[in-house]
Amino acid sequence: MKIEHIETFVLKTPLGTERFYSSQAEFPERNSMLVKLTTTDGLVGWGEGGQYGPAEPVKACIDAVLGPQLLAMDDAAPSVVWEILYARSRDFGQKGTYIEAISAIDIALWDLMGKHYGASISTLLGGRFRERVRAYGTGGYYTSVDFDRERDLAELEEMVRRYQSQGFGMLKIKLGLLPVSDDALRVERVREVLGDDFVLFADANHAYNSSVAIQMGRVLEATGFGFFEEPVPPEDREGYARVRSRLTVPIAGGEAEYTRYGFRDFIAAGCADILQPDVCVCGGISEVRQIQAMASAHNLRVIPHAWGSGVGLAAALQICASLPLAPYTYQAVPAENEPIIEFDRTHNPLRDDLLVSEFAVRDGYVDVPTGPGLGVKVDMDVVAKYAVA
Image (tube, rainbow, N blue to C red; front, side, top):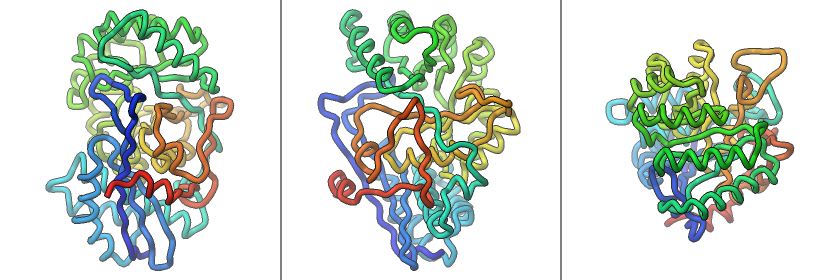
C-alpha cells in the first residue's frame, strides 16, 4: 500500500450565540484538521487531529515534515509508518502537535487498510465485542463566566432535561470555572432533576490543585457520580494519586496524555482508575492498542475521549467495539466494565454534518459502523464549506 497523494484541511465553524465555556477556555468556534490519503490504487483514507488547540500547526507538521516522508515509503502499513515517523521526530516531538499529526496519519492509514481488505478497523484489531456502544452525553458547560444562581441553574436544568429526552441515560457535566460552593449547587441540581438512576460523570478539565479537587470530589461522592475526570493538571501526577487515594469516586484522566510512554508513567504513578486516550491526540489507533494492553495488564478501564469531528467519533467507535470487558464478567455493566463512548452534544457541524450518514443515539446506544475501514463516508461539500484557505 503506497501513498500517492496527501491533502490536509483545516476546518472551522463559528458558534456565535451558542459559544460556551469550560474551566479553561471560551469556545467561540469548533475546529479540526483532517488528512486525506490516496493510494496508488485509488483508495482514500481519512484521519483527524488538531481539535484541541489551533489546527494549523498540526497541518504544518504533515505538509512540511511528516507527509514527504510518508510519500517516500514503499509500504505505508500503519504500525510501520508510526514507528518510523515517531523515531524521526522523537528529538523534538514526543508530545503535542507532532503526535496529533501522527495520530491523523495513523487513523487514515487504518481506514485505508480496512478498505484494502474489505474489513472494519475493529475487525482488523482482532474482532468486535459489540455492535453498538452505550453513549454518554457531554454537556453541562457554562454559558457565562458570571454565575447568576437563578438564571444559570434554570438553564442547566433545561439543558440536562433535553439530554434525557434525547434518550441518554448517562451524562457528563463540567466543573471548575466557579468556586466549589457554586459548582456544588450545579451538581446537586442535576442529580435532583435527573434522579438517582441516571448515571452522571463530572469533568473539571484540570481546574484544581489536589486539596480543592478533594473538596469537590466529596460533593461528587455524596451525589453518586460515576467518575471525576481530570481533577488536577496532567503534569501533577502526585496530585492525581493523592486525590485518588482520598476519594471513592473513580478518577479518570489521560485525554491530555500522549503515546504509550506517557500512559506508562501515568499508570505507574497510580493516577487514575479510568484511562481516556483520545485517538486523534495520543498517537492514533496503533498507539491506543498499546495503551489498552497496558491498561488491561493493570486491570484499568479504558473509556476513549472523543471531542472532534465525525471522523474522530468513527475512529473512537471502532476502538470501543474492539475493547474487551475490564475485567470480564458474565453480564457486562456499561461504564463499570464495558466501554462507553463520549457523545458530545454541543453545537458542532463538523461532527453532525461532515459525514454522509449522521451518528444517532438509539435507546442510549450508538451503532458502530460496519463498512470497511472507519465505515463512514466524508461529504466533500461539507469539507469545502468549512475549510479555511
